[in-house]
Amino acid sequence: MNPNPGVSEQEKEQYELKGAAPAESTPSLIMLSEIDAFIAFGAQLAQTTRHELRIYSNHLDPAFYAAPIFLDACSSCARASARVNIQILIRHAASLQGNDHPLVRLQQRLSDKIKIRALPLDFDPENIFKLEREFMLGDTDKVLLQHDHHIFDGFVNLDDRPTVKNLQHRFASLWNHGEPIASIQRLGI
Image (cartoon, rainbow, N blue to C red):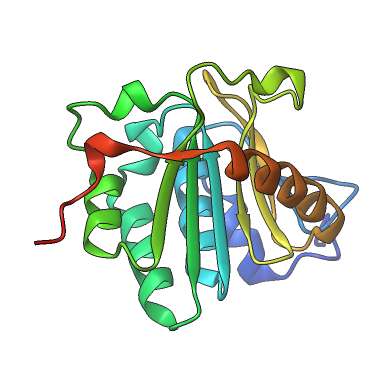
C-alpha cells in the first residue's frame, strides 16, 4: 500500500534519493536534508522551467551550483526558448572575485539569457527581508528553499504558487537593488 496516495510510483523513486523525503501533509512538498538531494531537485527545477528561473544565493556554493548535472540543467533551460530569462542574485560578490565558478562561465557564454547581479556592500537586506535563506524559483509554481546557507536543509515544491509569488516579490525588490559584477563581465570586443 502506498503510504502517500498523492504520490505515483515514479515519484516515489525520486524520494529514494538520500536526503529527500515526501511531506505527509502536502504531496508536492519534498523535504531535503542532503547536498545530493538539493543538486538533483535543483537540476529538475531548472530543467522543467520554461520562462523564468531566479536564484538568490549568498555566495553560489560550488558544492551545489557547480555540480555538472545542475549546470547542464541551467544550460538546457537557457537554450530551450528565446523567451527564457535566468536571473541570479548573490549577496556577497567577493566570493566570485578571482574565482573561476562554472556557473559564471555559463553566464558569460549565455549572457543574453543569464544575468548575474550582486547586492551592494552597504545594502542590508535584513532590514527588508530575512535572507539567510537561499532559494530558487522556477516560473510561477516551483520553489527550492535552503533554510540556512551553511546547512543543506530545506525543501522543494514543484507546485506551490503562493510561496513562489511571495518569494518572487522579495526577489524582484532585491534584484532592483542589485548591481552587475564588474569583475565577471566579459568585454564585448
